[in-house]
Length: 147
Image 1 (cartoon, rainbow, N blue to C red):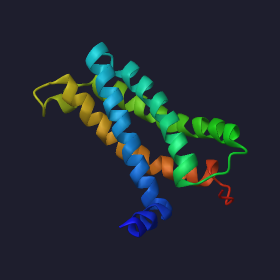
Image 2: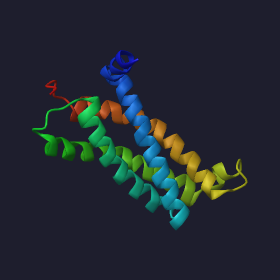
Image 3: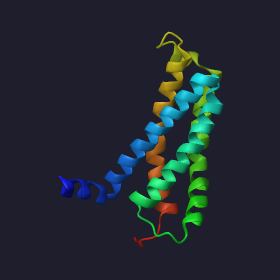
């Protein structure tokens, strides 16, 4: 069993999907919690994104792309800059479908704003996971030097 687990995490794509799934779970918990407390969709999205980007960097740097310690701060800056695009995508989708036009999705869920926010969050995360892998692989974690 231990060998199977090691093989799973040795595969970069599978490892990325696992930790990406964890990051998505962290994001959804944070976003839902902040939205429940504030009822501010864009603010909740922004806070959840910032905290999840930090979580994702740590897991990607240490476990997925297995980078050496030197250069970690430069990679962190590149990671945040690269994630700015998907952050803006998430904010834009939230603003359009939760804040401005909640009725588009709301008509299917009895106009429950929490459900609308959840649907938008899940949908945006699928797009973001795919885009972030490509961005991370091509622009951030480019070193082939593993510890």
